[in-house]
Image (cartoon, rainbow, N blue to C red; front, side):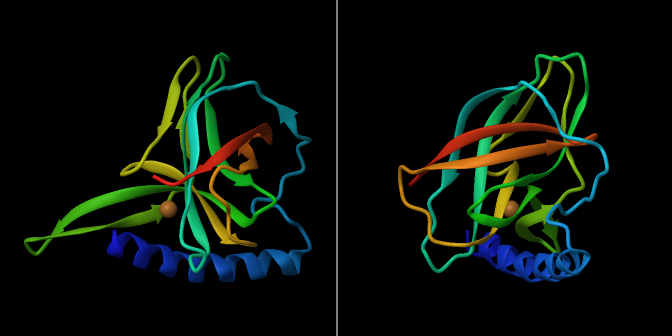
Length: 163
Ligand SMILES: [Cu+2]
């Protein structure tokens, strides 16, 4: 757990730099797109946001996404009013010199295949709310917009849970 949070802090720094650059560009979207947004209807199962101590500025988002459409989707980024950035990430566990090293890394996208599913779960793929603008409260509902390649968007609300 400790290693995971260390990785989280390192990434906060990294994304802080990226965010600063984007603010210079004047846009709010991490990946500027000229394509107008199109709604995509997905099914969300068992979604939740992890409650973290108020001192931590990042937290994780988990859910299972079902894609009833005939289109392969790539989840590239998200937005939420409570966070500066919402990034797709994956936890990893590697053997290095006889030691197990674990952490998380940003990924370019998360695949949600046509008629398929994408599982975001502890120890695996997830979304990261980065740069929380305020501490989240247990039980509150947080709006989240998922942005897929081609500027397809899905909006949802997930509850903050202490687990
Ligand atoms: Cu993460």
